[in-house]
Amino acid sequence: MKIYFTRHGESEANLLREHSNRGFRHPLTAKGREQAAALARKLEGVGVTRLFTSPIMRAVQTAEILADALGVPYEITDALREYDCGILEGRADEAAWQLHFAVFEAWVQDKDWERRIEGGESFIEIRDRFVPFIESLVAEYGQSAANIVLVGHGGLYRCMLPLVLANADSDFVLKQPMGNTVCIVTETRPEGLIWIEWEG
Image 1 (cartoon, rainbow, N blue to C red):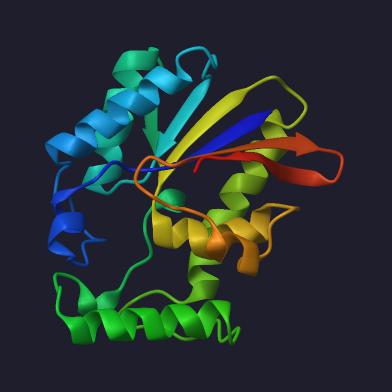
Image 2: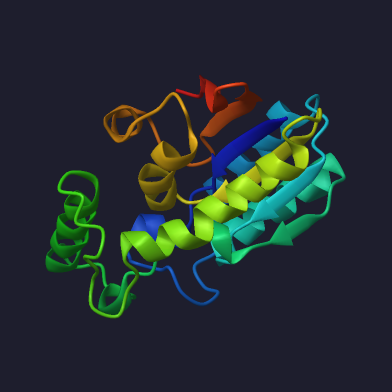
């Protein structure tokens, strides 16, 4: 089995630098739609068997483009949603981003996994929805030739991929590119799920 972890295309929220991790707003930009179309072209020969997406608009619209091009229906799962930033939702000011990065650093550097932005998720809560989902895919498809595409978010992947990849710790993941529609190809091996290609 191979799992293709990809991030959504560029959205209006990216251009605004606005926290937009709830509801269904901030669609893809024209560039974001082209990024998604380019990703679909890269995946055309893969033989994608399942396609899952975050419920947030920018991810769903990316998945719609992939589904149309690849002929595979997409399925929405909360497991792939970007982490909730609580009171920062809708904000784009520098103070909001400073708090955002402070909490992120508390998670990945200090292992303060209970820390959260007021009204938002802790690292543990994110882990408890993401990791079991990946484990369920490995349990169901790990011994098969399935090719599964997951459309998610940069913050989510930076936090969670070290927990599910046998050959990537947090220090490694934080140094890797996580641009829009980056594609991280992983596969099941005896030692676990490993990355074999990290675009960029």
